[in-house]
Image (cartoon, rainbow, N blue to C red; front, side):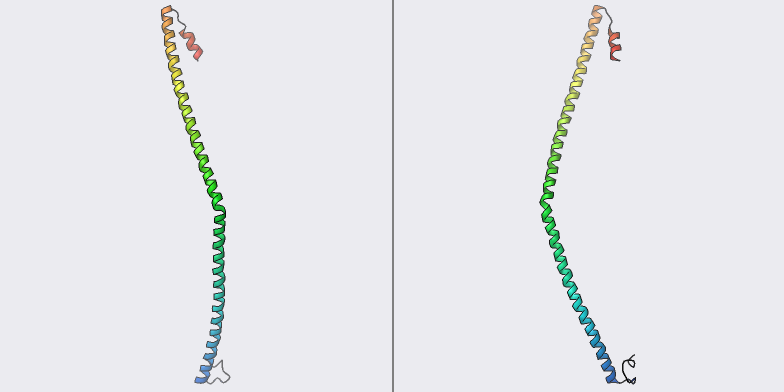
Length: 133
């Protein structure tokens, strides 16, 4: 290993020390360059991260009030629909009650008509039944 790096393959302490110092120097320069590039990249990505956060905040601020306004409009629309739904339910309930009242009136009138027929001695109940079908 060391014999390859020196002109004289004879290994000496000074020769080995020189080769190691050269290698340490080269590796130190490589490490320095790497750290320099790393710091540059780190600064770039830190700045990029800050820029992205600023852009996201800007987008959020830009659309926040629009989104809030649309949500408020949606809630108002839902409230209107719920009120209209309650009105329709009330109308349906009223119509059902009126229907029951009409059926009771019709039943009462039919009973009265049956009594009149009985008192008069006529029978038109069969004709009334046929007209219903």
